[in-house]
Image 1 (cartoon, rainbow, N blue to C red):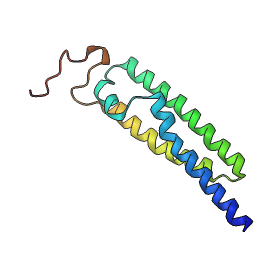
Image 2 (spheres, rainbow, N blue to C red):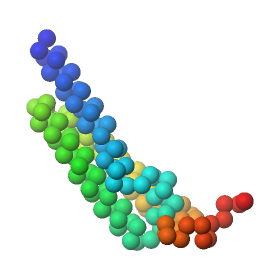
Image 3 (tube, one colour):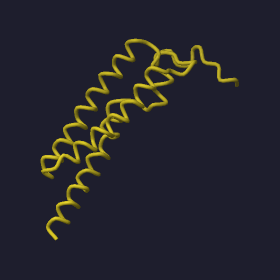
Image 4 (cartoon, rainbow, N blue to C red):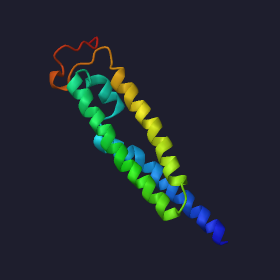
Length: 115
């Protein structure tokens, strides 16, 4: 019975740590749609990458902390796999702005949405 509780505890900590990854990134970065719409200049892209680093560091600390509590690498592994997937999504948005993207301080100046 103790092994089942330990396994359940490890899985529970893994789920909690993994589910926090998007929260830390969302706290440091705008949405993927917003990045694609307004991440048009180099200064914006630099700020977005700083947000990626800060969000990744915080998420990584939670994964490592959960692994230390569980005495098992699974929470950290799950956290870093999820973090890698999410960072790929953010990098794609940063590197592939919408064709009409303009810097956020120029909203509405040159947009033509067909209406």
